[in-house]
Image (cartoon, rainbow, N blue to C red; front, side, top):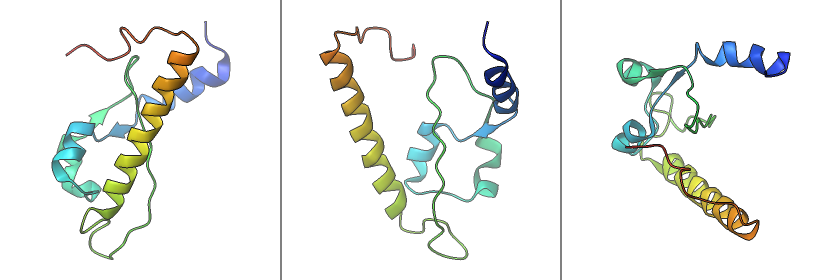
Length: 102
């Protein structure tokens, strides 16, 4: 059983909306939410990684017109994932089964 604060947070997250990574990659930039409203996934799921990104809009009409911020954040995510794999390896943790099934 989870402690009460976690359950309270979980209830709020189940109502959230997320842009799946493959959709974001397809845009190669941060799109406006109204652009992707029909593509948003609802809720959070065990075994999936959800990342919240807050960034400054670079233009009043488009949040990331040339994809600069999306590229920078993508590299930061890749570096973080590589570091996590290295730490898990050093600690002797198995990496089998950590990716969701296709």
